[in-house]
Picture 1: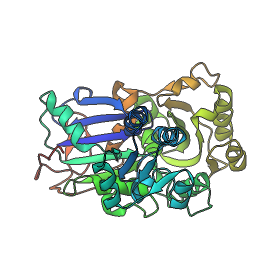
Picture 2: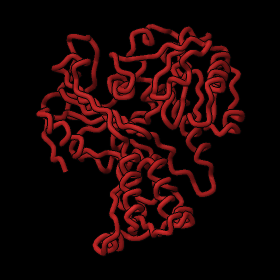
Picture 3: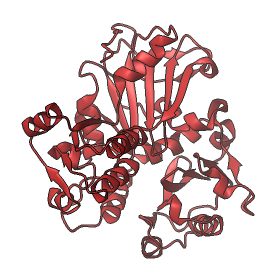
Length: 381
């Protein structure tokens, strides 16, 4: 059984080719520049060449790609985008136009590209290039499934805060009692408002079983693959990403509270204070939001105190040396692949092309509901 897992972040995309015929530590993995960083470089090249810029493709993660496009506009150069590509920068296309980016049809975009404009195609999932990279090293890819994680703010209505919309979504999913698994979806089950997840679903091969998940809870779920974290009955698990920081307080696998913030807004002391407030149930949604975070919620004010603070993510150094004595989670020996490990724990209801529930006999754990009945070799374009 082979599953390709891709964690699409702001700084990097972290790739694991899980193969049940190999020890997990020997499965092939890649840490590559994130799609938005790659797009930003291509936009900057267009700016340096003083070319008009035309963006096509689908909605993807913004950040660096958005900043580079705005630098292009501020340099006095024209920028055009098709509607789906433009929603990378704002779900409200009128707001995109106000940024100085002209929204054009697909035909108009192709005409601009044919006339010499720098053409940049937007997507979070570069499936073909990933396969070509593996193939270049002689790796035979016969996939039984694909798992992709992205951070999705969701399509907030015009005038509605993206941060509030995002946190309302987190609250709604958790209120359903599904735990971290409530953030995992099959292709057909992605909520309509989660436009970035839906864009990945639309660009992945249609005949390949697909699991989609939000990166933040996926990283927390992946941290539970660390033996020490898994042994804890009431851990706080924090993922300190390049762009976002999220922490969950879990009791016997159930979420009792969480907060989510922007990593760049946090000092070590401020992050530690929020973790302490989450631990004692006093954290305030209003205070986190006023501090430029997304929000906080405590579902159970009588929850037992945490017996472990586990930290993962590329910016975890923010907590190193803290008086809270964090444990740096390294599931299967690799912190950067934490999110990619979560496919093992988030596959409930994900049972395409299955002839049963395969078990890895060496570990005695369920890896997902993939069967060997129908593996495929995919086009790499």
